[in-house]
Picture 1 (cartoon, rainbow, N blue to C red):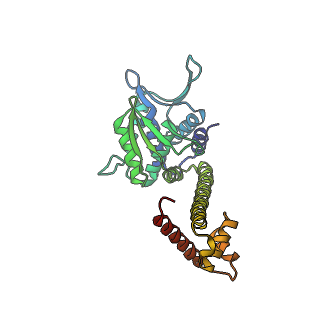
Picture 2: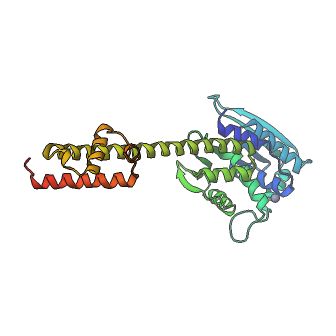
Picture 3: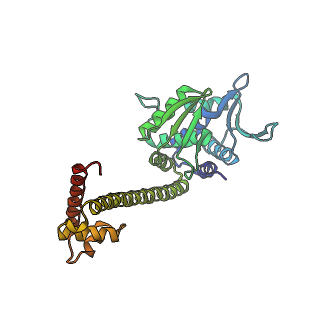
Length: 308
Ligand SMILES: [Zn+2]
């Protein structure tokens, strides 16, 4: 089962306690994939491809409107790939009552969002259950909710925004996608809609991924340092060889000569290791200072007799 399906199945089992939230979630399921049908609007349909979500819709409808007649239809397409469940409210007056309640929900005065925060969360859960998906975090961080209606896309976007979730919006093949690409934002979303198990799983993967990245960074950094040490040692060896060829190492002051000889004997040693090998022991910066003097001497010799 995909991570998206797992999340959907988990959310299909979350039933809000407050009446206002139940209505908000149901209205999202209707707005994203529902219709008023028939000559006299005698059907109000909720569509969904998941049997668990269809069951939830039925529970919500029957809980809010125990007296209204309902029906569940199952349609399997000819290709046998797509399946669709329809939860139908039967009868013009029944459909009108449910539809009217959706329209009567209290809206924010400035934005096209539900007024109460609890209901906004329920609305997002319904929207995700209807047309949402989330990619397995092992692959990439991506959550989206799609709709063909631009006004609805903005409503989803504004609702997320009001709950401090910053989504992006793109248009693709006649659909609008409200999407999240940031791991933390997806975690916040899963938390808001109540997908606790999916959230834990997502977080575990995220922590592991970040740890792996950090280790890679450290390894790369270590490799870079080793490279630097080796490059420096190679330059020093060249300098020493030059001095030896031109004037002989014995011409160097004793301390420089000792460092030079130790470097030749220990081409891969770090400065600290060279410092420890000196007799008497010398500090790392002392060794570094002498290596710089060797460098200067080599440069001086090169300039004195460039042809050689
Ligand atoms: Zn509410």
